[in-house]
Image (tube, rainbow, N blue to C red; front, side):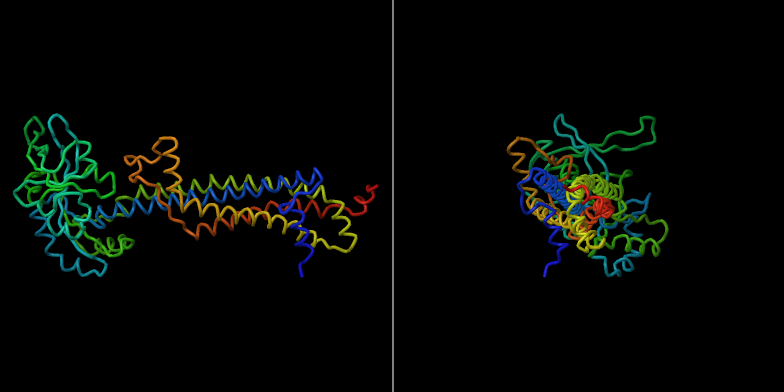
Length: 422
């Protein structure tokens, strides 16, 4: 059996039907706009947060495919000396169950010269173990990483860099390296001719437009005194990188410089988290405005129904019964708006990439340039814990908006109200 409070709450909401009276129609219109406002606010929050979650996850995955999980180096040592020092502790390092592999690397900055075009790049010296550990062959568009043989001075470049410099497999380029010296000139450039042996595409724009691979032994000969060399450690569980890094710091000699991916990219991820919090607060205002609209409609409803409330009171309805009518009314409206918003938000989030592509095709614009956002499509990742939090917040705000109108309804004196009825 349905309680009369619940029946009156639904009846007073005006959602299920429009009445003939103009004032009732107006109240129904206000109520429906409140529902739509709550739905739009909830849907906006779900879509924005799911897109930001997807963006963060996609960029992180692409980063971790090319950046070191943990990096060991000793400042001031060249490639040979560092390698000898590392061998003393290699058995201890690889003993950790979370460490998948360790491979040597050599990094430095240089410039590519092709005819009259010059562009700065990051040169990475690698060997066959590095290629296998990071599965670099999977990112190749053409060529073979194993052609980076010692003494051949071959190179493999990113796809975006290939487009910018208009170079392809088989072409030759010059790597321009600053050679530091003690004379008054400061430094003099060193040029070395390289042949393009392949082109790779990692899907990470910054990497594809900036990185050049060469043999690690060729790199050690080319960069005599201005290179960073060390060991890249790959992990089974990348989320444990801070713990593994801390363990290595506590057990290796102090002169080892140890960095993990979460610290080297800390500011980027902190910025994304800050943006998520700010967007949550900003878009919550939409829900707040909608609940204020609900508050206004309930105040008007209480004024409109004061005679009915007075009659209920004379028939024995207690304050708690009147309280339940308007609390259930606000809860019903907030629940309907929240459910509609959640359904709409989830549907839009699951199809956001197609929606963006449709808008780009219609208006002939590029909403997601790869050089600015690392990726060329809009990802999504719906976090249903966040969806639950948004839903609870929306319903709670709807309930809060019923407090004053309910108190107002309880203040009516049945005798005074009914005395004015003619």
